[in-house]
Length: 135
Image 1 (cartoon, rainbow, N blue to C red):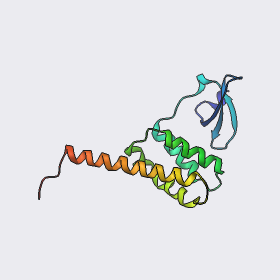
Image 2: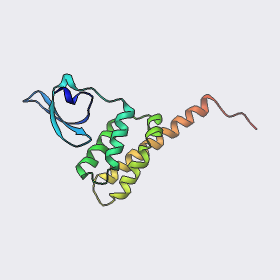
Image 3: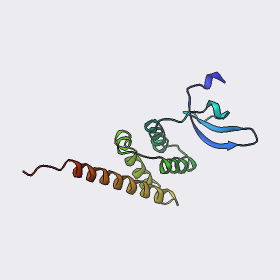
Image 4: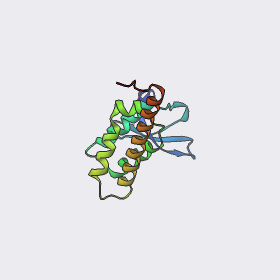
């Protein structure tokens, strides 16, 4: 379906019997079956921004929140993308907002701690490469 070209979607699952991916179009949430040849991965910055937007949606079902957190957990995040998207702040807020829900708080905390440590190590490495001259 040519009208779907260029649309952003989240892959939900592989449907082996049909040889297609089931995707959820963004925005809107409409589900479609798409051939593998018609799927392209998003660049890290765009995918991170998409997951952030899904987490910030006030009407996002918990399944979407969990799915977005799982995807963020699997991405090879960079400090540049974290800085540009501010996704760490969103993930931290999700953990606070959904404090009573199993899995969400733990995943949120783990992500934020991992990203903080990554940032700390990167800053430490930069100090080692270019130490500040004494005053």
